[in-house]
Length: 65
Figure (cartoon, rainbow, N blue to C red):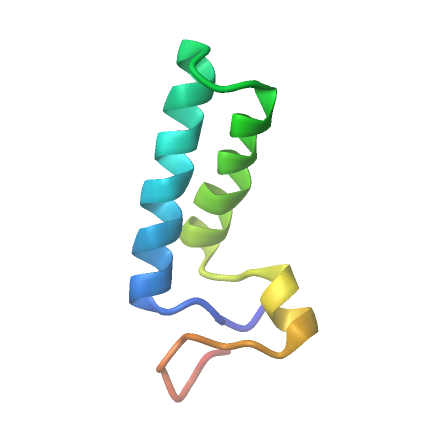
């Protein structure tokens, strides 16, 4: 896997994912809030399969292997 998520993108995914998970766990929003798990996972692994398919890369590192 090549890294394709930069620092700012990673932080935003982590925050948004955690907020969605907490809101879903509290019952504030519906079951769809658990999609936040995907955002947290992509932030932790620094790889987004959709970015890879679309050719998007927000990672500024020269060596992304």
